Image 1: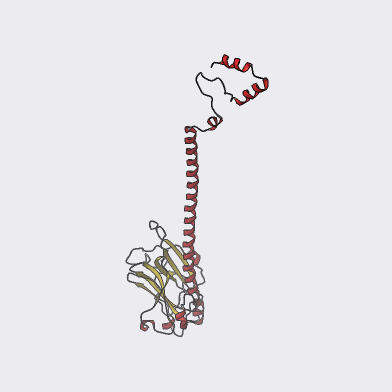
Image 2: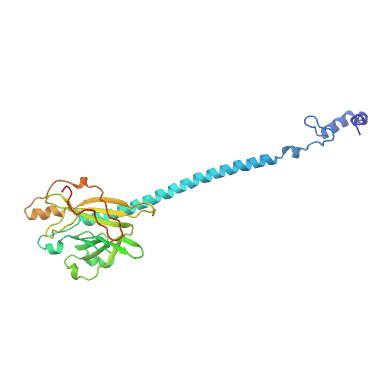
Length: 289
């Protein structure tokens, strides 16, 4: 039925019925092509495929951005934590060496028992031995040595885990050469090189070897190389000088005066040999000579 037929059919209806009929008929937006069907409210509110694809792409970009930011933050946090833990381990090692050194003991009456002994071990780095009163790193099963004990610091080499810094305890008044095999305690498994230099209390010079059994150095200079967390990174080398207060009393008891020139602040980082066969300093001469 055409439009004119509808108008004739509606002409006989009352105005109220006509208004209700017009309200029930959906209004088309704009002109409608002949033969087309009117759009319902559900059809007009739906998204097209292009709009959905665009929304998904934007959401993917947002998720990728958030993940990249979170991943970078996690990497930074892990790196910072690893650096902090490595620094803490290094600080503990150096403070342990300082505690043992500052409590070093020497008596002129028995230099054979209290002498400072330093040797270069074959394939195991440098070894340092002296008497100390510090209880640091004294295990419970060796409490009998509490008081004065002879400590030996050495870079040991384990076939499985590689080099590590170790300590052995012995009675101070016992000849260590006849005391049997020492029991080694691990100080740090991160140490790959251990070098010691000695400051002579008479002239204040630094020496790579100590060959004076009747005298105690006024300071030790420890150069310790710590293994890096990243195998591709070189070891971190730390050099620190530590005073031996007992040296001044030893010379005073002999009527001698110690060189008062403070050379601790002139200490610089030493180069160490990180090869597999030995860990030793480059030269065997005193600084400035």
